[in-house]
Image (cartoon, rainbow, N blue to C red):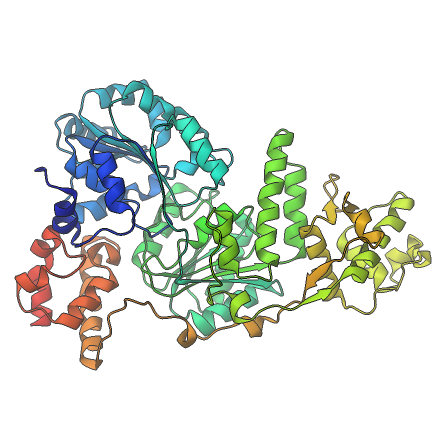
Length: 605
């Protein structure tokens, strides 16, 4: 491809007039041969930061990506822009791989996508030596860090890039990295001299909502029916069984849904992912195996039916919603059992004490986000080193502020029950202890002579659901912990004694009814830069969408690869009648103008 300046490439290839945020500075750094570490939220335009330098610098940009299942879509999207892109991975035949290798060596590729494990093969290193490398882009760079939420051992081998090709610039990119993860990336990839660019982590169009579990699938169903009818979205579950059962539940209730998890065969996974990317209004239920690198712009909600293990993971997953900048919902249901289960998993996990301590720290931060009475977005941004943000007005704690109460006496009652049982050398889970406090005289309690405990029946001022909230928050505040016997039994911590002695006040939050946090779609914030359309414009927009859908189906592409909604809305607003007028539309580059210009003018003229 003929050499152009970054700004010329942005306009001619991608159809945009200006860069966003730090994009221009990042691109200039890499074009000039420097290394860069880029932290930019999902949907913030990370890919342009390596795609444009690959088109400006001599040679081929080598993109290291863990997303084999998505490489085809990424290459198709670039092909639609007239960019010469290809990939090498295990899904190809030997002849297909040879063709790509030949094109690379001949200098006929602008970008080449590789999985990290491929760089462990000497044959791949030898192949790269035979061509001209413009740059190395290491996508999802947090995978190199054991502090990160998605550690991939194959990423550790990527240090070879700087050692073998010291003159080739490297750019490492991620949407989620705390300071510890960031430092680990720099150390493990040898990026000590790299320029670091940290964009704001804020995604103001996403409304964060966290609710207490109360039949979570029914809660999810209500959310989708009342606020997201006909929308595309992702539902995350902890187990494969839950993924499949949730997909079946939604389908039975009239919401088209597909399952996705690592236990499914690769063909089914690929088919479900392809359908999600291409079909409007489809819901995917998945484990965290799904979603990294998903470019679908119109995901209107991301729901979690189980507590994520870390804030990084939660942020990465919720960031797959609303990439187009329009209103989206990040909804999480969690309860006492989630906390018990995650504490148990952390305590009994394989690994040394440092690893277990790291898991505990990650869970503590996630629980703090769930239980906060302050703005969730403020706390989320502070976690990623962006403190001082004002309350957002677009999360549940802002729109329906939770009330707190002095739960010291309730905490003392529960902790005292644990003490009384421990004096008998007995340990039980939350349900049994709550039954004791409520004075439930069932067969099990009577057989164990727990009716004789001094704490029996002293907790009738709260109901069972309120007690579960108390226990959940005591676990979150580390005033209780889960034993290591594998049964979810509860034990005191060092901090428990300060509560029992009356030296520490325990503030707890009241449970907010689900209905109180519900918001109608009409009350959600509209996108600030959305193009307003009159009735005729809306009709034209729908015509353009119908044309885009048919065009995408014929080409076997997701609709957003043809054009984003924002581009179609601008066309519907300006009603261009010539190619020159079309050329001024944002998101309409030279290749798309040549390919689709006549068809668009036939609709708008």
